[in-house]
Structures are given as structure tokens and as C-alpha cells.
Image 1 (tube, rainbow, N blue to C red):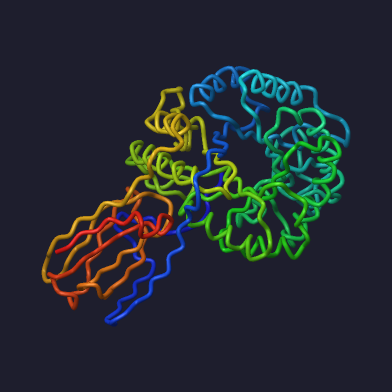
Image 2 (spheres, rainbow, N blue to C red; image 1 turned 120 degrees about the horizontal axis):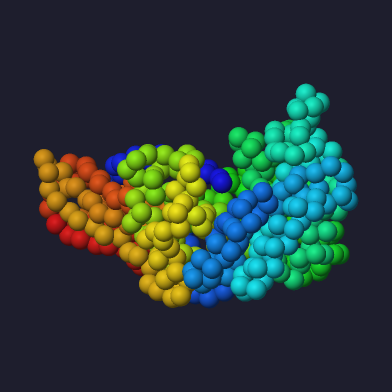
Length: 440
């Protein structure tokens, strides 16, 4: 699980930037994310690891994925569980669990993204004090440190590609190496060390199975700082797609990282293989650093973002987190007992009808104490923009984000008056073509 672009999530509209123009002219510049229709988006769901769970997990989960119409699923395959004691010695129990899941997925017509991470004790670069506590039979801090020798990891992922390549959507090389909490990738010089792993793994996988797609990432920061460091470390040419995890401002984050790619001559597709919303409202306010929403808002957000992504050709895959709730998380489209939440119905409809129309903003205007109040709702995933005009002259602009329920309320400056105004609001991703407009 990842959460990680940290933007405030209050209950009122939060102004990120506010610009007031009392000027005669204004030339707005918008960067809508929509480019052209795309029907090739791979849609799937995260289901966790096949290792160490109930043997009936695949029997329970795969029919639900089929009912959704999902094309892919993302699972974690811990290196430390499959090759725990020495190089080349594969644990038979862990292998049997992985084989079972892969066989049943193939029978169900669902391809698998294998997330491979977690260094075995024998390969870990953890400091001696941490390494002494490493236990091959269970996960621990030492497993988050990358291997001393990238070739050891390369040999393992080549083994996976050779065994399962025809059943794979992709092999993902590690998880969130730029994550600040170091839960997955610990230690110094992260960009250089991750690049070394990727540069070793890619040719090894391609030699084992040239058709297996290799994903770099998954990156959680949308500023581009870590990605630029990876470019400097020489990652170009060593991946087929870039995995990203954006839970907050999902669409805006995709646009931002894509712009960094293009600025660096990189046009490999993005795989958004972890994102979602937790339906923990009202019994909680936050889970995994993410604002709780209602089950209905979770479903609406799924519909809104997937419809936007269907029209975004630089995004190859969108994999929701996750299929089933757990004891401490409500990100699933199923409850812990398997009950289908509104999110399940929403996702199934999106998969069945990918060309459905995107949600548009709503806008209401009212006067209160010498101010015009603009309020309404909008589609989730990006910054919103409000423009106020007197006649044809732009006078005011505000950039803001929606609250957790996708609502907003903005008080316009008293200097604008309470009549003779035209106000329009739109999502930055969609641009002015999809604006809601009202006059007062």
C-alpha cells in the first residue's frame, strides 16, 4: 500500500493558489490531460501476495475479478519468501502457492503484474546490526534494503520470467524506491542503487523471455526529482513502462510526471498500478495517510478517474488498490466478508463501458454579505480553476482543490460586486471545454 502525494484534505474547499486580477486583459493557459480516445487501457485490481495466505484465496478472489471483467491483477512476489536461504534454492511451498495462483489466473484469462521486491537475508545490504536480526522465515527491516549484488536479483527475476513469462502482464522491479518511510527500499543513494538493480534485471528478464514487459518504479513523487535522478543514473532503455502510485490528485500527478518524462526524451507509457480511495467515513478520518470518504464517493471517484484515463494514451494500465478490504483498510471494492460495495458496481460498469462520458463540474452562485459565493462539486483527480468575468473582461481567478467529498465553496472578493458577473469553473485536466458556467 502506498499513499503519498500529501495534499491537505479538509472538509472545506482548500485554496492552493489565489490570484486576483483587476486588469483589462488576461491570457489564461490551460494544460488539459485529455488528448485522444484510447480503448487499450489495461484495467485491473491489486490482490496482495499469493504466498503465506489461505490456499483458497485464489478460488475466492479470481471469480470476483472475472465478475468485474478485469484484464490484469497485481500481486506481490517477495524474493525473500521464494529464495530465502541461498541463491538458487527456491522454497517449494512458496513456489507451489505462486504456481497455483498463476495457473488459476491463466485459466480465468487474467494476466498478472508481478511486483518483485524484499531482499533475502543472504543478499541484503542492510547494516550488520540490522542484518543480525534478519530471519529467513519472516519479513523484517533487513528485507527493505536492496541487494549487495544486483546480479543476484537479476538472476531471480530471470527465473520468474522464464517460468511464467507467457502468463505475465509485466514484472515490476521493486516498489516505491522513493518512498520517504523506507518501508520498501531503505538505505542511502537510492536513485543510483535502484538504477543498478534495474539495469541488471532488464537484460536478464529479456534473455529469459523477450516478451515479458519490465516496469520501473513504482514512483510515488510527482515532482520529478527522483525520476530525474534515475535518468542521471542511466535507466533509459532498461524498462518498457514506468509504474507510478498516485492516490491524491491522481490525474494532476500523472500529467506532471509525464511532462518530466517528455522533457527528458522519455515516451515510455505510464502504468498507474496503485491508486484508490478508502471508504472509512464516518468511523475514521484517515487511513494510510489518505482522507476517508463514503462508499458512494469511492464509487464516484472510480468512475470519474477511469473514464478520464480511458482518453489518455500515455497511460497503459490502471490497477486499483484493491480488491478486498482488510482489518485496517477500506480501500477494497469488496468488504472483508466479500460483500460488494458500490465501488465494485462502479468498476464493473467502467470496464464494460469504457467510452462513457466524463463527469463535469457543477456550479451554484448566491449572494451573502456583499460577496458572491460560488459552490458546487467536480470530478476528482486534479486542481480546479474558477474564473470570474465582468462582461468579457476577466477579473478574478482562483486555483483550488476539492474537499474529500468532491465539493467546494469559494467566496469571491467584495470588490467584484454582486451583479454583472459571469463565473465558470472547470477541472484543469478537462480544461475550459468542460466548464460549468453561471451568471448573476
